[in-house]
Length: 115
Length: 112
Image (cartoon, rainbow over all chains, first blue to last red; front, side, top):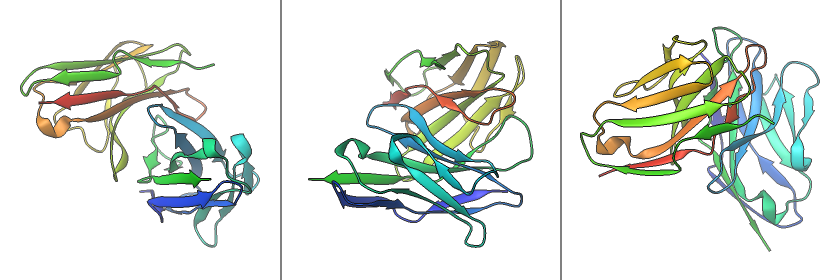
């Protein structure tokens, strides 16, 4: 069985400073990993995904994440936060067995961006 | 662009009522999913379907059932709504090959 742990429920940064949202995963197999973002009153949108190609994955809106097998981590980063980045972020893992690409979601990290 | 639509954004029902939540996708996706989202718990999978008339239980199926009569439509049914089913319900779909799921905007259900 696979699982993810998002280490911070809330993160607050100033506009223009770096963003780091932490995620650790557990999987019996080589996992597929995702980050999704949810803006207020909106559905979830895929930011990026890792599927055993390059370990540094670039996503939309300047976000990227690095897969580190030795640390079982998949942290999300952005060099410079923008006000529009304020949202909830979910780290997600998919094991490579079974049907219909079942995903397991973390509990979410709410990112606040202040002036 | 993939579009996943849900029949209602907000819904208020009374305890004991039968509730239908509808989801439609326009990308001919094989897989469809229903999740509920609660603060501090993330998204939890209720049911999913990998083909017409096929369904599998997710992590929290109790109190729910589903129906998939057509490929593009996946319905979530609360046979007798209870207050602990007050939540945000999200529908998603994905293709047979890709594991990326595309989400609808959600239905916020309140059971009084």
